[in-house]
Image (cartoon, rainbow, N blue to C red; front, top):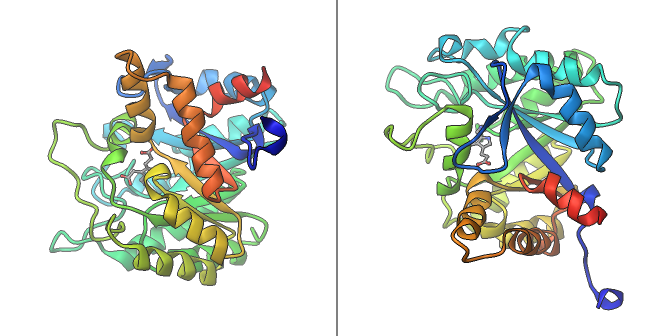
Amino acid sequence: MSLIEECSLTVNDLLLPVFVHDGEEVEEISSMPGVFRWPLRRLAEQISQWHAIGLRGFALFPKILPEFKDPLGKEILNPNSLTYRAAKLINDTGLDLVLIADLALDPYTTHGHDGVLDRNGDIDNDRTVEILAEASVLCAKVGYHWVAPSDMMDGRVGIIRESLDKASYTQVSILSYAAKFCSSYYGPFRSAIGSASPKAPKVEKGSYQLNPANRREARRELQLDRLEGADILMVKPAEPYLDIIQYAKQNLDLPIAAFQVSGEYSRICAASKLGWLNEMDCAKESLLAIKRAGADLIISYFADRMALALND
Ligand code: PBG
């Protein structure tokens, strides 16, 4: 009974990922039933509705049209790109909310990697970091409150902090994807933003994302991002990595976020479609477990429906 319950989920724990696209219509993402790509003409109204049910934090993810992609992901530095237009529209609502920009090149590159490649086809860490730092200033300019580097390049948090400070955006926070594992649970997300499809050859991100077997390395990544100036540290995926969330909470004095990723969402939806699991019960149990492990904030595709359920 709730008097002796040790932790409980509230709407303040939840951040909602929001996919946006340059089309006219609302599109349902086939591998993520109940999750949609929003056209800009519907975005402000939809955000207001989510705000009305108590959600305050929104992480935007753009689906970039193929004609704007290239191997260098140059579109991320176009101030009129979708991500920047979307933020302006949302901020024009005047609502009190936190807008989070995902900083990585994968929506913008033809190869789907989070960074640019060198001559050998390997990730060029330092060049990628420079591009992301420049993009972080564009994000701040259009009113993103937090930037969230999700690329896992080395040294990016420090350089992004320096660039934001130099441009006088000292108040913009860095939500760092600090312990991001090379997970098979990102598949539905990659289809959602069009950076890969289940039929195309797999984009191998193991040279920059963490090996799921490595706890010590995850600890080191968390510590490094904290030293470089991250304001919030994130673990991703969430439920398969509760030990890492617990470590972060107990050892690093910063707010800890966890990303319950697309595959964690879709597996619950799929089993419930088959009649094997109850969707909202499993969603709640998963979110509660993530909170119990130590997450202060959870990015979840269930956030909107969970907010409604918690309001009841
Ligand atoms: C990439 C990025 C990914 C996600 C968020 N940002 C995928 C990846 O690393 O390939 C995954 C989110 C999800 O699966 O819900 N910058």
